[in-house]
Image 1 (cartoon, helix red, strand yellow):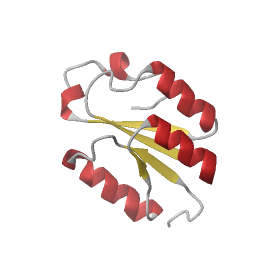
Image 2 (tube, one colour):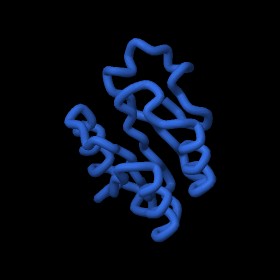
Image 3 (cartoon, one colour):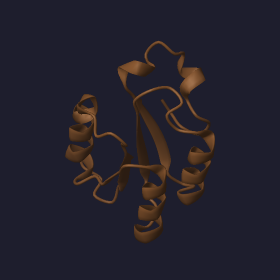
Image 4 (tube, helix red, strand yellow):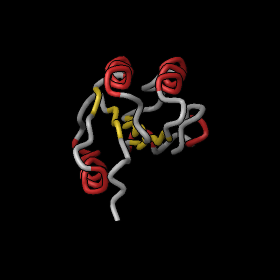
Length: 105
């Protein structure tokens, strides 16, 4: 059963093909999911349209996002759940080294 009230915002700077399956999964469950290309754009979208229930961050390499950016996102959507989807470039790094505080891997 689809929760029609669930709002999802994705952050994907590169629109990489490797994340297409995740994009399809999100679309099947939440409808048309908007994607921001940067943290700044995501914060603007939240300011204009309200905070989402979920923020899905696509990370292509370790340290792609700075801790300050995640803090900015958390401030814009303090009640949202944050999930990070990693590309293969992150596979060799232990997840506790790449997971930014407050973001589930």
